[in-house]
Image (tube, rainbow, N blue to C red; front, side, top):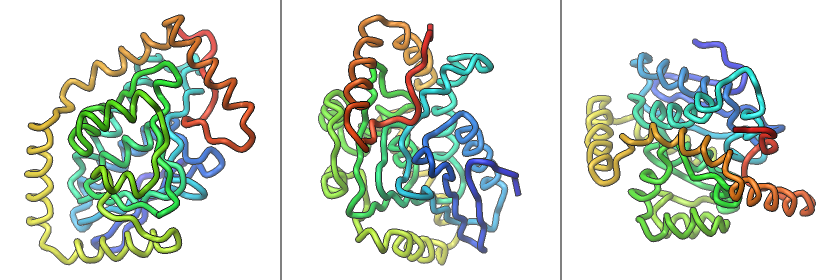
Length: 272
């Protein structure tokens, strides 16, 4: 079993549980966490006994999105950092076992892309979704646009990405993003129950169905061109209008006591 620092992977026969473990940052997706998700997905590919994986977040939220503070780290190339999310989404989306996202609390930006990369999605009735990237002056990257288009359609994707308005679990269910909405105190139990039902199916049926659905959704809205997202994201960080938009948004957020602005961390200073 790999040794992780920002997540845990527990395997119990045919069911595995993958838990984001940065609760103090609302499970914001740092480069380390993104790399560990890729590694976990690869490990699960080889864990032939595992049929189903439940993906969830520790603490008050599923995931507060990408930690933009990572761009201020001089160790990593900005484009390399920006591309980690695409690699994560592709690894989770194509890992052999069936994946179930169990969403509670805030599910923001890159966290929503993570959830959309899973095969099935449950959410607690108090879950809140948002895509704040346009408010931050950056495009939704990581193949998020085609993933959302094939789940909720182009019109809803355009509106939610560009208005950045929050939406609740009931609306997410109506749009087709979620399979089910459950009471907040039952989200873990419902996810486990669904995993148990699926784990009772023959592995060949689960894997074949997943491949067929993946092929069909790729034909509907392909993520094959998502590699360019990182370049567009880095370019937006250097755009004066985009940076002004981000600063205005973050200043307004800082005045709202207790608010979750959408992504973990602060904007990069001196990014280019």
